[in-house]
Amino acid sequence: MDKIIIEGGKPLKGEVRISGSKNATLPVLAATLLTDETCILSNVPRLLDTNTMVKLLKSLGKDVDWDKDKLIIMSNGKANPVADYKLVSTMRGSICVLGPLLAKLGEAKVSLPGGCVIGVRPVDLHIKGVEALGAKVDIDAGYIIAKTKRLQGNRVYLGGASGPSVLGTANIMMAAALAEGETIIECAACEPEVEELANFLNEMGARIKGHGGPRIVIHGVKKLHGAEYKMSADRIEAGTFVLLAGMAKSDIIIRDFDYHQLTALDDILKKVGVQVLVERNSVRIKAPKVLRPVSVTTYPYPGFPTDIQAQYMAMMSLSNGVSVVRDTVFPDRFMHIAELNRMGARIRREGGSAIIEGVKGLCGAPVVASDLRASAALVMAGLVARGRTEIRRVYHLDRGYENIDKKLMALGASIKREKE
Image (tube, rainbow, N blue to C red; front, side, top):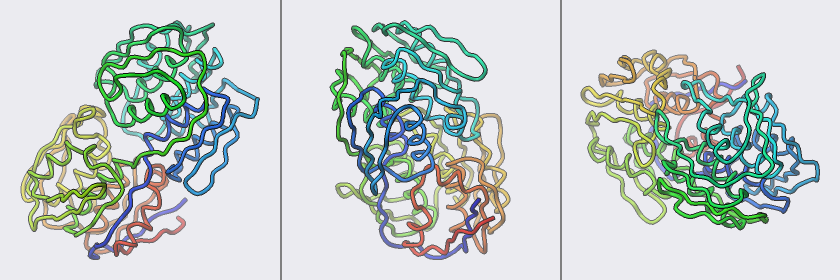
């Protein structure tokens, strides 16, 4: 197991290119189960999570060749409806194979998913959705077991306690693509990753409209064909680098992503005092000498993303005053507070909110990464802290950030990996 060691305080400057989107790639990979023909995906990030999904596809009857950032996915004629616990339990995105397996094979046995420890993430909306399409579903020994003769289109409402479900929307959209008749998803997730999945499915011959909005209409087709598709850039990685540049007060150019997907972050940064100069598919960050404290609440897209909550909290730990971060999507996603406090931050939790009292500086310390985005927040803190920071359990980081240590070294950071 690796750990990351950072000597903080080094000035950061230069350019960084954003990799392909992890959160878009995982359901798109699952969608290849809907066809027996070859699919080719490019701009795929090499991450632990994408590797896990590739292994899962292979276990379900696909042959996968990986050439640089390109994946070639082919069927090997040995379709398998069972998504094994050993793979699914490590990554919640793997729940996305439920809909495609059920639609293509008429049955699916999918282990209940795992992933980061950021709070309860129920699968009730996934089950509700496939049941609305006519599947019979049971939970047995940690597996979702679903069967159907042929899925039937229906109206499905996917609003949950914390808003629409991104993966639930993805699952039902994929299942409905091969269902008989029309399916209407109400209160659908509006995230760009859902929109990208719909675009890929339409390239495969699906008939989907309304994606990107809260009402998606799917006209089922009998068969989907192969497709070639380029994955978009990772908006969460981009947001992380934008926040790092603001926190480190660095002149950094961030390339190859769509900044318009971060509208909520942009609105907050203006209040904080961070200037973001947008030029086509890149941005340049200019940070103020003093960061103003600004409170945020996370919401489903297009609201402030829960996936950059920890990184924003790290930046606010150096603001000139008190700010509050409230997470309505994952109210328990605050395990990074204790680790940031070990580095000199002043943060306390009150229910579903964190109160941050800005300090003048952070100190390097040994810390432990609890989840993917908390890992990024600790790396950010380590880069600006005085002295040495040692971050353990960085396999979380490798689940969602491609070559982040190399990208940071190119910006001038003193960062290295060692075996624990």
